[in-house]
Structure formats: structure tokens, C-alpha cells
Length: 115
Image (cartoon, rainbow, N blue to C red):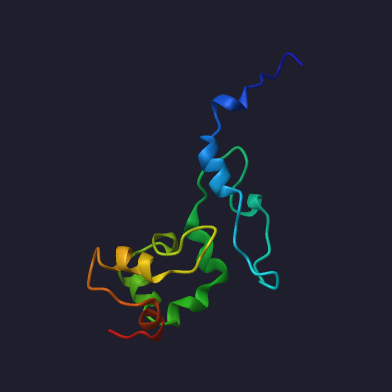
């Protein structure tokens, strides 16, 4: 119809390398978090979703280890440590992330709340 315009998506799509890297998400088959891409990535909105909704379902994480300190006191977002499509924090990732503010703390020590 005359009231509509169309656009060629090749001009508004991310580079192919980005698409290739983002088409996989690591979930265990019995994971309670079974969802589709559109659960986080909403068509016709920004390319990157808003990560502020994690605590809607995972509020209990605030009492696990040092999460409460980092989220409530320091104002960090979940995605600053937990990468989308993986969620686990590796020792290498912790060395890179944690040492921007303080000395290295292993993910195990973080979860135990050790200083």
C-alpha cells in the first residue's frame, strides 16, 4: 500500500561477524531459563537489550557472596561481569574485570563473599 515504506535490511544489520557470534547461546538442556532470542532482543528496538531486568527473576542473588555489594553499593550492572550468551564468569574474565577496581578475587571466593 501507498501508506507504507520498506527499508532494505542489509543497510541496517550488524556486520556478519557479529551475527555469527551472536547466534549461539549456551544453555543446559535442563536449564530453567529456556527462551528465544526475542526474549531479550526485541525486534524494532535497539540492537542491544536492556540488562536491567535480571533482578526481576534473580533477586535472590543479592544475598549470594559479594553480589549485593557490587550491585547495590557500587551500582554495577549484571552484564558488567556476566556476559550475555554465557553467564558464567571465568577466572580469566575475573582477572580482567575485578582488577579494574581492586585486587584479583577468584569467582569461587566472590561467591563465598571472601575479602
